[in-house]
Image (cartoon, rainbow, N blue to C red; front, side, top):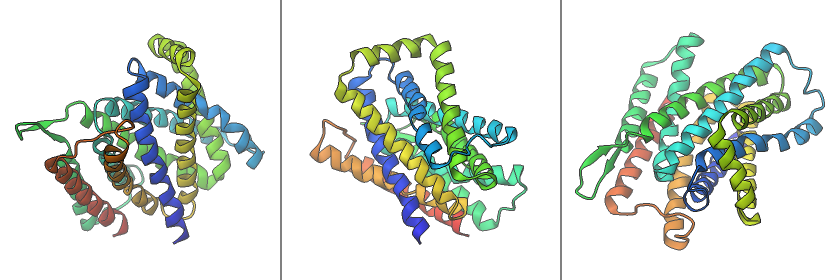
Length: 305
């Protein structure tokens, strides 16, 4: 069970970053916040590289096919961040993260079509349960108790979940052939390169990023650094857990993230409303609890049986 405790650190750290991201988007980067945070998330990876090199100085002895694969992993990481931030900008954190429960569903589908893996009847039922749970959270309950589809959040988080599943599979393929540190080094190097390309070719992102660097106080920059440290630490812990247990079981622990986000959301709303607030009317809490429980059940059935 050591792997379980290690893997559980990841969703705790990710839950904290969800609220830091929301705080940055709402209160400090109202204009161009998504582009700024995408660039920060990508470019800050460069600072991780020296530490990984110290852990394993053979990082450059990686094959070209593995490097190309990890380049795709790095790109997919940026896609996940970009879609997630766009969704989070206009939605509650506890709503957005529920869609990450679809990651193991997409992982199973990819395994079926790409690797020829067999899906059991229970797994198919589990996938249906997860999809049903995310469908519940896909609709917003307005003041008149009418249901309205979250038209922006749903497609963005579907893409994010698919990209996350694909990059997890590709990373493990390379990490098992090479090792953890080599794989992490090239993943973060590729993320840095993607960040540089975005900086060079997307003018609005570049201008908002430079403006944020010039105008933000040390406190805000420190908050960005803390956020990225938590996120990268979560990635490293989860990547390490991938090598200790089957990828499906590790992804199962990531299903705890909505629970942590939900609990933190209520905590911040009551005690630190300046940090984050979420809708805590009975109907909204009930909707979130039902969706989290159903998707959690489906994830358990999918990855255990």
